[in-house]
Length: 77
View (cartoon, rainbow, N blue to C red):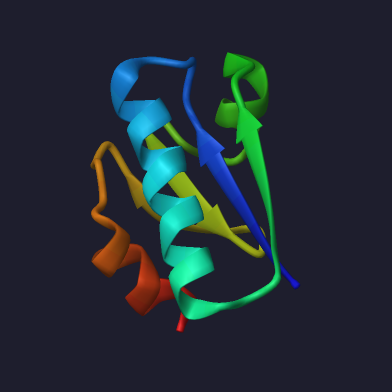
């Protein structure tokens, strides 16, 4: 099971990134857990200074960008 985390305070881009991540995982048919990390202190502990950010299995894959579901599928695949 993949653990996908969307890091951000809940801004529109953060919400859209979460939607895109969920869509990507569903399109690939993989088992996943989606977690939204909204506390600034938790985000900074991961070394992220710009949101929205995406982590997969604990590894930061993107910061400061709104990725499309196609981009996320490549990271998940």
